[in-house]
Image (cartoon, rainbow, N blue to C red):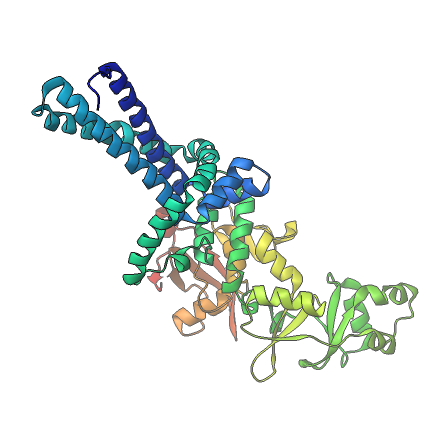
Length: 432
């Protein structure tokens, strides 16, 4: 370089090159650190810099080629400039010192510091950078294409496919983690609903169905006056109609279709039979997400769950599926409802036929849900016998006392909260 060029100009050019190096380094980190889903939302909302950034990131290999081309060109030019400056100041002996100083300056001021800022605030740097890089990519495309051709060919020889590696999709577990970690942005209720939707494929109709022994329906073998009283007092909008046994189901009746006749006192068994619809059956073990789609497909809201032999095991409705997503739909099913009652000493009296998942959801408990669906079934499975009243056990960290039993199972239990104080109230044997 001509010795007539002032040193001040050379230092000025060096400072410009360092700024360019910092720009390339920081924007590389910022673009790669962008949240792709937030970027896509902003792009779809019409934000022009976000649209440009999304287009650039569609081919990250080309973007990296452009950035590294610019960064290396700037750094090599800076190194040549430092060599000239070093010779002008101290001769050939100063080249080594100048190179060390340049290395330190680039490392701190053009690499570590800019990349740290970019990692902390990627959007603030990436959006303006996209406006610069997009036209720059058009201008430098031949060089970028050649660089990528050689680089991708080398990766291909090593067995790495660039095209197949580009994906932004999330599986269910990853999406569940994203929702769980977004608690600061989502209300707790909405987060719980989203997680419940993601859990639908792990929950089956067996988990939410009304068990066979609790199905309320119209038995045509009963006296007609008994069935009329059942219809008048029923809290349900639909009832199954069967003869003697639920396995002999004849159909389903929507009570609102017979209410005018009921009010007029003209409802007869034949009129009821005229209004029944074909029963809809689903096999046990059907995932809830699939069953929800089934309900939509067949335009039904009520189905009977059957086992492999065709025997009815329970009943599931669309309300049961929705309740699994949004929680209880009425106030009567809370802690003061029919399954759970809180005592003055802080323990809870629980109907042993209560569904475990429902108890966990209502009470924020953590009773095990793998295996039996009801509390009665869980206790009997653990003890391998029907216990007598007064028997104590611990399930997980919950001390439980059997209060009332019947010939075929447990009726009521007392559950203590998992605290040392509660556990001292009852000597228990660990069955967890």
